[in-house]
Length: 292
Picture 1: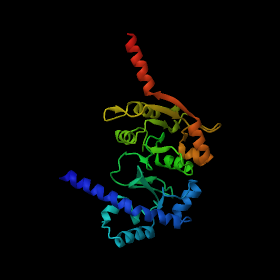
Picture 2: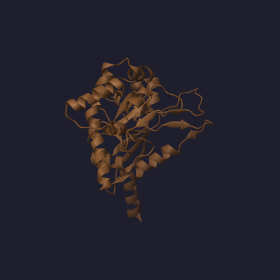
Picture 3: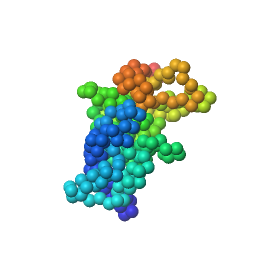
Picture 4: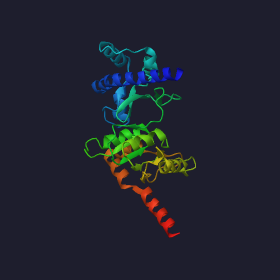
């Protein structure tokens, strides 16, 4: 019974998130020179679109008024669980990133636009888990997989005008989960290009463990006891020449910010190399078996 009640609350919050999201997006669209809009366009170099909303006392009030006008019930605990509070707005968490899972909003990520020392950069709605951040997936379409949500949004904006755009998915970390594997399988997606973060330690040495772990996870992830990924490409972004590598990191978001979204898309496509082709390995195994 307790589990059922927790699940009911989680599902109720997801409904509130979906219903309140358009109001927050519209608030940002109408206030592009506010704190959230200025941070997004001037600091991050990203466009204002449906991947972002605004959290202020005013936008929060309008969102709640809209719910009441439409007869949608909510509690303050719902908004607190979603991290949509006046307190967070006053403390710099003004940029709202709706968390899309296959096109459905299930919660929010809030970005601190002031970069206050010792304050977390991001706040997350409760109980979202690592289910994969993605717009509505196209069946059977090759998919770019990145680590963070901002990486995914950068690529999505790069392909915004492309009617034949690939799917883009963020793992929410450095390793694919079984939930994401199931999501890919349900959409007949078995060709993936992984775009890892490129990191160096304080001694300027390349850090590879997280990327290697992710690559291994792609090769072993299963759904319904079947391999999910049949063809894996890895596309490493180039490290600029002449930079101080001590503690240096570059990902799709920062690469796109520095070079432009179009250059990012070209780099991801141009640097992709074959890493693992499941069918070929199976054929080789069958051939060895037959010969023996």
